[in-house]
Length: 232
Image (cartoon, rainbow, N blue to C red; front, side, top):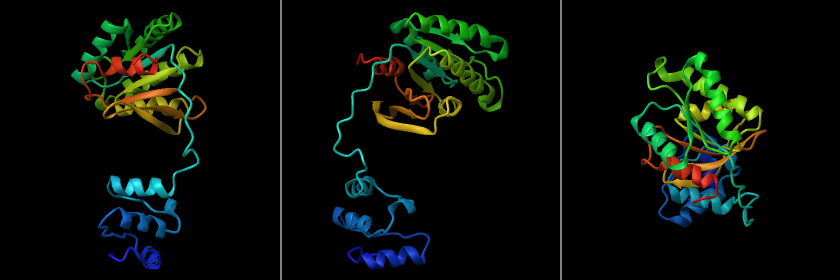
């Protein structure tokens, strides 16, 4: 549709069709389009950054204008690495080297207890602890390895041993968030481009950084831990 200046035509188009394509010539058209939609929450919006800005301008949300409180500095950070990528392994090595982190491999059920005790000791001492999958893939898709990482993380959480998380690998982040009862992540910013930081939405609002397994430079995990600890 081209006549974005007529709110009625937009409403009629949405009532008639499941998919509506708007030909916007500028920001004013995008803003008019957003204003013309009766209930924006019932529409799946797809478009450019300009459309996102128009939506934010018309529906800023309840927190608009508020100055968010500075997040608390994490004293004990737990890092979970479920990715098998070479980039993740190098980032692990650099985190141990630069931050004195303690790394433990969760190699199957038999290795869970040793990994738990190593992480428990490190976190109790105020050090960063890393739980990682073994170098060899344990099964197709790495599912069991991710499950074991989440299992150990939940046990550590039950003892209140960490106050922030870093999760490398999408399936790792989803598994641990789900096990901690989180329904999502409230974004706050980013460590670097493509590496978001936020807070889990749920009963345990841990601050968390998530990262794709093969993403980032060798010091990305170091920067993530330092951001959570307030040592940027």
